[in-house]
Image 1 (cartoon, rainbow, N blue to C red):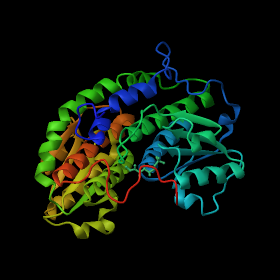
Image 2: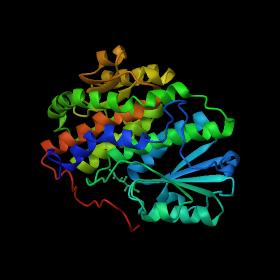
Image 3: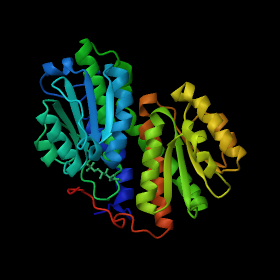
Length: 365
Ligand code: F6R
């Protein structure tokens, strides 16, 4: 049942190229590179003035990535919110708002309650779900299914990367509907090659992840730093390490270091720094954040794209990600972080697929 893998989590990490392939299937025209997500054109999509993305946990992190895509391609302001917060405040909802719920299981109580609230206030509703016919799917006008296949491991991996992909597809789709023209055929064409490149990267990086994990798994705390589209990935990397390996970890926006967390830095507190030239201006900024940590003798582990040489010089260890379009960075950067959490958990003797105190589907508040 685990297909030769020792745990479901590892199996599901390695299933990601296939999950992405399946999620893309039938949604991109191979001739025109047009995205088609809905069978018929929905008129109200053109009238949306505000998007609320609402989810919990890992799905919330996918939402944070989605904000970058949605704002960049649709020019519609986006707010991303934790469902447990959203449902208990008074969000300003009306009929030109789009409520976008994200849930792997489709059963998360807070996300479902938020969706009901949004509907009651007249907002339009789309959900991104992985489980067919789940409660959230049934109560949504439109459901975009991620085709990740069943996710057995409690820690979400392939659901996350397919959610990120679906958010990119949706952003590009709304772009086309609004403008009446697909402005990004080259990017969409590149999406078709993503599964193959990801597969190569997985195979190549796993031995390196093992080395890094072996060296660092006894640390008591980890800091994960990123900026821009890699900031949500820092949050996700830290969440994975906490839930699977029971190591205290914090994800932080690298630019916030000097506003507090840098006080923690010392020799025994490693930082995993996510840096990519593809993020433009903030790459240089991330470099200076890394330098500040090095000056305070904090060990640095870098995840960088090929060609981001400056980061490597500062890091005790690093792992290289292939050069991919900016929009694909979150998918490529989260994979080694999933693997690091997995490896460290195994080395620490944790029950990887069934971490203590956690349930796969959170159907109560
Ligand atoms: C973390 C994890 C959880 C879920 C969260 C939301 O690995 O699995 O944080 O992401 O409970 O679950 P769904 O997506 O089913 O609503």
